Image (cartoon, rainbow, N blue to C red):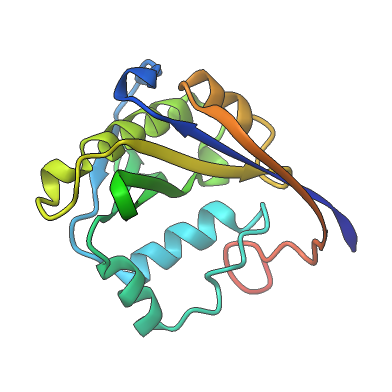
Length: 186
């Protein structure tokens, strides 16, 4: 089915732009996945994005996943609710002190529980201090991300409440296709 897809790009240009969310109640922890794992990253990607049309990485081979995760300045931060993965944010360093939040989201069962604002706050803060963990990278001057009309209904509001400002809007006709789900046939 063809439909209009609107993509919004948002940015922060100073660490002081971040308006952090309060931590949710309960045992929610956010931990950096320090050992790059294509299997774990693919699980997070497919489980978070399966119902919102994330398909661009589904065809990557194990070697391609390994290459993506091994890039200097690429980090995955995972939210755990009582030990269970609830969502993640993937950061990727880009030239001239820019860091992109490449992927961000929650598994469907964890949405609407105030985990997303906290995860985005922590992930954005980690984007701002990325060079502290990667000494060969320049200090972060800009953090950006994009979201689209196929993402969850609260995504744009969450980004703006965390201090991200819109800098570009693009609309295109795009075939939506079937929702892949977290695994084939889901």
